Amino acid sequence: MRRSVETSAVRSSGHSITDQKAAPESEASVVFVEDPEDAESYRPVPASVTNDELPFIPSSIVSASTTSGRHWIVIDNIIYDCTEYITEHPGGQDILKPFRGHDCTWQFWRFHGKGELLREGRALRVGRTSGVKNKFKERPKFVGLRPWGSDYL
Ligand code: HEM
Image (cartoon, rainbow, N blue to C red; front, side, top):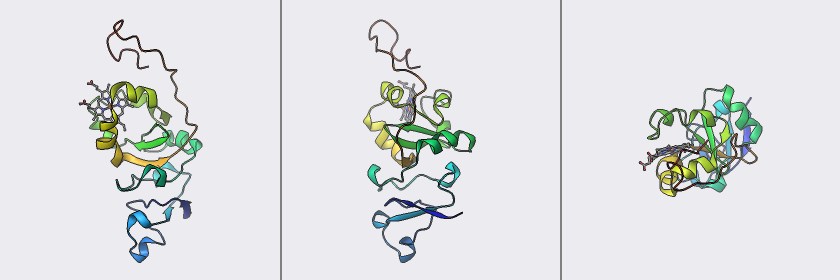
């Protein structure tokens, strides 16, 4: 079923009533996806789209994405599609696997700065969400007592 999702973003591979009139992507107001409840329908949006303009994807769909072919993770309520990126991730594939379909905000900020998110993450964004759970409770940082990063899980 083809349905609209309210957003000003346009999927790079999608069609919208506005892009048929050759409107610039940043001005488009409606995006169509094959099935908004299926993670497979979404693809990363152009870097020019702001976070506020990303399509809103409910947490239930983010959780259900684990049964799709996509590898979504959530950082600060933004969904990143790491399906292809996981093999290129400088920190390795294994570290991303437990976070599929989950929030990993605090773990991400233990290892990265804003630069990585802007430089490498921006092209991976598929949507906004809220209420996605982090499987792991954040532990205090024991700087100086343990090797840096050993308490990320
Ligand atoms: C959008 C998602 C992510 C992007 C774009 C990303 C990007 C990057 C980049 C660019 C580096 C290299 C940093 C450098 O050379 O200084 C890196 C390293 C790393 N990342 Fe990620 N990452 C992501 C998610 C995660 C997550 C969820 C974890 C889990 C905790 C993680 C753990 C690591 C680790 C452990 C390293 C190696 C750090 C080091 O060698 O000091 N990454 N990542």
